[in-house]
Image 1 (cartoon, rainbow, N blue to C red):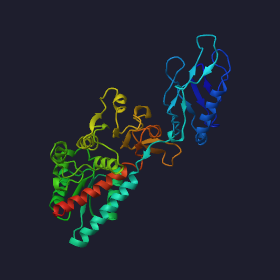
Image 2 (tube, one colour):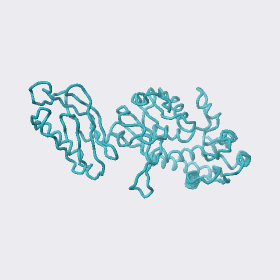
Image 3 (cartoon, rainbow, N blue to C red):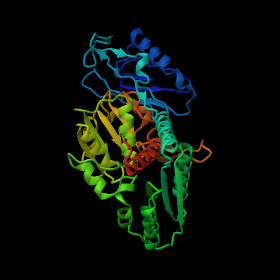
Image 4 (cartoon, rainbow, N blue to C red):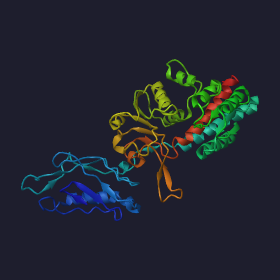
Amino acid sequence: MLRARTKFWEISSSKTLIKPYHTHPRGAPLPRSLLKLAAMASALLSDCAASSCSTRLHPFKGKGGNFSRPFHCPGSVSFPLKTLTCQARGFGSKSTDWSLSAGSQVTMTANTLSTAKVIDGKSVAKQIREEVASEVAKLKDTLGITPGLAVILVGSRKDSQTYVRNKKKACEAVGIKSYEVNLPEDCTEEDVLKHISGFNDDPSVHGILVQLPLPRHMDEQSIINAVSIEKDVDGFNPLNIGCLALQGREPLFVPCTPKGCMELLRRYGIEIKGKRAVVIGRSNIVGMPAALLLQRENATVTVVHSRTNNPEEIIRQADIVISACGVAHFVRGSWLKPGVAVIDVGINPVEDRESPRGYRLVGDVCYDEACSVASAITPVPGGVGPMTIAMLLSNTLVSAKRIHNIK
């Protein structure tokens, strides 16, 4: 309903109709022009009928009778009108008429319903895997060299086992030979270091990956440091990170997830040079290397983290946002600058009673809201996730070619 008294619209998604009160505060009828606007909004909301959630347009803020604000429907329904402005005359006098001026317009066009281009990580990852498979086949046919990737798994975490299994399948699909070591949860740090040393010396192994996290009784940094920098396809060795941070130096490997983010930006033609970029999160695995990579591409980079004051004000200035904070729907649509490119690294489970699993996966960014503001955005799932393994395969191929001095 359109309530002139409170400037609040309520739309029943069960009927997808807006029924305005026919009086403003003084009891005079609203004109046909406003009723027509309600009908237009009702038409745009026709897709909401299937939704079980109540669609509400929050109170507009402004001076006098002028009000304008982007708004959204909570839940899975989105109503991304860009502006709604209306002018009422006579709240403080006996006048009871309404008017819509040239400067007070309702903009409702089809392209505002979803303006963002979807950055399809699955599709790009598939292209990269095909490129890697082609290169691997050439190495085998011409030089008899088969790239090899070794994975060390400690413990029996279900998620880690799934990741390792997926990496093994991906290797087999592109022709990379996979080596796998499974160690019990209570093994010693020396056991892990022994296997790393063996793979460091094995010429058939070109990449070594220690699946994280490790059990608490192990020194994670010592184990990562033990991996030969020439085979550090995860890119976590301090020397690789140091070279990434220094001007004029090139790391042997770049961490896979940040590298995948940059590859998505590149393949979708999103300009980085001279742009304002905000990275949300400062982890060693994603946030910190992502910020360094953006800086290498001549972006002006700001890192938002858990101690940042007023993060929404900083994020709203960004032309590019890479979010890796691990908080479901942390970034709202109102936090984003129109036309921003959004790379959402977050994979967060949220309760969903309609799902057979009882939950669904969402990103750090509220996707439905962001779609009406951003120019391009990655979905979750299907965005950054597939790129991580694709970049691991690419790094393994690069390592094999480097070790054998192949250009």
